[in-house]
Image (cartoon, rainbow, N blue to C red; front, side):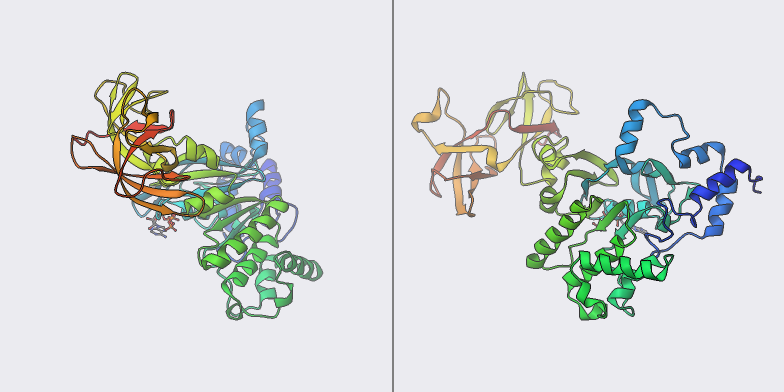
Length: 435
Ligand code: ATP
């Protein structure tokens, strides 16, 4: 049973009704996706509590001055979002704010929940737990959801999802059905011009290359002028040569137009190359958020260290202010995260290949102690550096295999090299005793 709608509710409906757009236009951002029904929205508004309504209005809830600043910089946020498909949990208490104008990559292994996060933000999946915030306003929660086309959020699907029976022009114009004819034509032409597809208006999707289809999908998403654009692995269908060109062109357009962008990828190198920040996900959770450099140089977990860039893994045991490994006793600047600092505790020790130093075994630079020895298994030049495979010799068991990236390898394959680690460049995490 719905409660009676008050004057305040009517004011609210006038401002948040799906037929009254949040950005003042009557075009929609996602009319090509499944939309919520307008009358359901009205019924929901009638049933909302005062706190729900305050949450949707956003600014009506008391906000501390400092929060106000961060809210105004937040273009899109997932707040404490959980999600299940049937009974299986695929997202667990995800909280992530995307700053206005930034390009954030959602990075993680297949099945970790990246696409589900995008679909929740776009309104293609109802929110079960938590809330979605766009430009400081809650647009969706467990008991309400602003229509997808009214959120100011555009989505480019992995397979582009162009309508095969519509021309390029009509595919792009489809998202602008609420506008007067002239405005619709103007915006469609401008969007196609922006992506360099103005001469293909009469073509059909099957007549276009993968890169051209991607551009049309981008034009369709840009035409309604979204606040936030979501890209779900938008370049994965393109071959390697085209991929880089299309990616650079696409991201140049988004950056120069100042559009806040969230891009899903499972390619760590791509995320490192293009993003302002990366949100790294694993098994339905955000495990670390930061700049590419921060994730690479200061990973907060063994998973993060291993997912972003190549890394060597060793086992070790804490002793005093350091850790014993096959590469000797390594001094630690800080206690490893998550483990009690007791002597003998097993830890994972991770080292980037470029942090290993090689020298001729028994050479003049060995210092008071001979560094650990490794047999050089192979030496390969990869252009900018040399990749060296090593087998570290130690009395406790089989050799441990490592990879080093060095400018020039001072030792030929088959000979012994001394191996050291650049000071302060080991990452140590609580581990399991494997011995
Ligand atoms: P990928 O990189 O492979 O695209 P992802 O990180 O984007 O993966 P999601 O597509 O969000 O992952 O899926 C997360 C989990 O939810 C997966 O295990 C997937 O099988 C499951 N899943 C997704 N959509 C549905 C659905 N409609 N019904 C049931 N399970 C689903």
